[in-house]
Image 1 (spheres, helix red, strand yellow):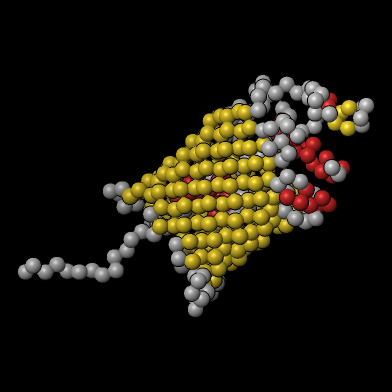
Image 2: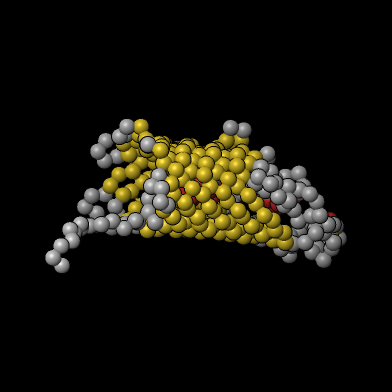
Length: 341
């Protein structure tokens, strides 16, 4: 194993198991997936009866065991007797596997909320109840106390010297989110949201210690600007902060219809930069979405530009998502009943 890989594995191990560091939440680079992962109110941001989203992400394959993440969202809308009021509820599942320790996370979430429309404004509030189960595997890991001076290598038969309480842990998590959508004239549409994550600061540790998941605050801002009869601009900004971690994604997409092309209705290429106010810039996110009927397919790649590019050779994360939206039924013909029959 190279020195670079040894260093990376050691840093990953520290981030997973030491008391004074903080674990990272599951995140995606594509906006339509990442917003819903961060803010439960965004799960209701679609026009239709119900929506299903699936996403897959793989990163760091070039420096060792790849990190893989998969997610599934299902959201259903419920009409009320009040035309401006709408309820929605849904389920979400995420699976994440990372590093030589085979750290595995299974996350189950129940989202529920309501949207209220007033004139050109729409306000949404949602609550997210989650159950997270994590586990890891010690086999194949090497600890400092297992270094054997007699052989000049690591001996897995020696004691690790680590007082693990177990290889499994689980906890309940609570998040809330709000969203505001509005329009300015016929050219501008804007959406902003705020989320409060890990409100009860659940205990998260493989040691018999009181390590807690820190509360986090997230914000999203996106807009839609009609540049001309064909092209639309979609600027975007997302920021998340918790003690010990922060992330900002900023950039834009453009969308345009593909008239005369039977397969794809609309194409939306995008370019984002992942950085932070108090952290280094680490990646460009380049990709595109393609809309065809009730389906929306997204493909993106993170180009690593941080100091880690010495080991990754500018390779980052590959991400794929597929969205299905069931449209509300529309009456095509209106018939006037005949009084004679």
